[in-house]
Length: 252
Length: 252
DNA sequence: CTATCCTTTTTCGTCTGACCAAATGTGTCT
DNA sequence: AGACACATTTGGTCAGACGAAAAAGGATAG
Image (cartoon, rainbow over all chains, first blue to last red; front, side, top):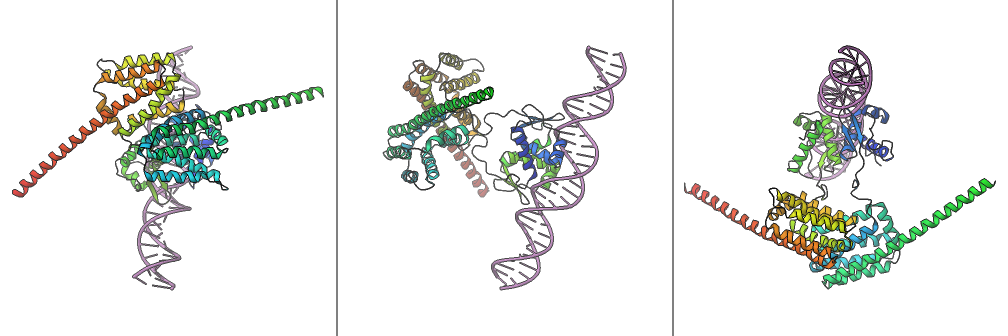
C-alpha cells in the first residue's frame, strides 16, 4: 500500500516508523547514509531522497559532515494539538458556531435553508448504515451554516474545529462514545436551529446552537464520569486479582 | 541567504518562486528533470532532491513516466487562505474574540489582569519606535485574554486569526494602513475591555470587544473606500493620458 | 475515414562509482 | 596537559547508464 512504486517512499515510511518506535530517538543521529543504503538494500541516492523528504516533513535536521539528527516532533505536526480535550473543543464549538449561527441567520439564502432541510432528513435516517449517513449529515448541516455566514474566515475556523474533532484520537473517541445514543434528540436540536434560521432570528439561532452543544457537553461529562468509574472498577478488579494470585502463590 | 550551502535548497526556492510567479501554473507540468538540471546548472540528482522536497511540501505531484505536475495550492498550505479579506477576518475576530472575552471574564486570574495592565501601558508608548512596541502590546493584550479562557482550542483558534492577519499580504497591508492613526482610541478601547474583565462582567467584556472591532471595521471600510476612489482617479488619469497620446498620434 | 493496436520516444526511477567539503576524531609535538 | 596538524567519517554533488511507465506517433484493419 505504501510503496507507490517509488522506492524512496517505502524507505521514508520505514524510517519514519523506526523513529516513531524510538529506534532512533529524538536528538539522536540516524546511521550514515551509506550504512542505511546497505541496510535497506537501496542505493545511496534513494536514501538521500528519503532523508530529504523527512527533512521537508520536519522530522530530521541534516548537518553537513556531521550526520542527520532526529528532531522532537512539534505538537502541531499533524495539524492537531492532541492536548486539546473534547470538553475544550466542544466549548469552543459552542461559542464559535453559536455566533456563526447568529450571523448566518441574517445572511442565509433560501437555497441554503433547503439544503439544511435535506441534511436534517438524512440525519433522521434509520436504515442499516444510518449511523454513518447520520454522521455525515450532521457534518453537512453545520458546514452549510458556516458557509451561510458568507465569511470565509469563519467557515475556515469551523472547518478546522471539525478537523480537530476527526483527527485527534482522544477527542474522536470521546465523540464516538456519545454519538450513538438518542439519535432523536440530535435531530430535534438541529430542527430547532433550522427553525430559528428560517425565522432569520439571530438570537434564537444562537440559543438553539448553544442548547445543542450544551447537551453534547453534558453527555461528554457523563461519559467521562462513567469512563472514570469504569476505570476505577477495572483497576480495583485488577488489583484484587493480583492480590488473590499473590495470596495463592505465597499460600502454595 | 537562501543557499544554506545545500544546492537542492537553492533549487527548491527558485522552483517555488517560479511556481508562485505563475511561470509554471497549477495543473501544468514542470520541464523534464534533465532540462531543469541543465537550466539550473546542477546535476539531475539535485533537481530530483528539490522536486522531492516540493512534493513533500505538497506543491507538486510527480507521475512516473509522465512528468511533475504543479498542484493548486490548498487553502491551508501556509496556514493562510489569501482569498480571505481583511473585512472577513475582522468580522471573525469580533465574533470569536468577543466570546473569548466573555468567557475570560469569568475565568481570568488576578495575575492575568495585572499582565493586561502592563500591556496596556506599553500600548500607550509614545517613544521613537513606539509603533512597533504598541503593535506587540496589542497582540500581547489579546493573547492574554485568549489564554484567560483556559480553553486551548479557543486560544489556538485566536492565535490562528493573528497568524492570518500577519501572513496574508493583503490583510496585513490593510491593517497597516489604518493602525497608525488615532493611537489614543485604541488604548481607550482596550482599557474598556480591561475594565469589564476586572469587573468579571461577561456581557460588558463582549460588548467592549465588539466595540473595539467595530471601530477597526469602520476604519477598514473607510480606507477601502479611499483606496477605491484613488484607484478610479488613477485610472481616469491614465486613460486621459492615453487618449491624449492617441489624439496626438492620429493628429500627427 | 475512423478506430484500434503497436512501436517509438519521452520522462521518471534507480543504480554505480567517484570526488569534494565540512565536521570530527586522533595523534604528535611542545 | 594543551595546541596544532593530519586522517577519517559523513554529508554534498556530479556523471553516466539502464530500466520501466506513460505519452506520442504511425501503421493497419474495419
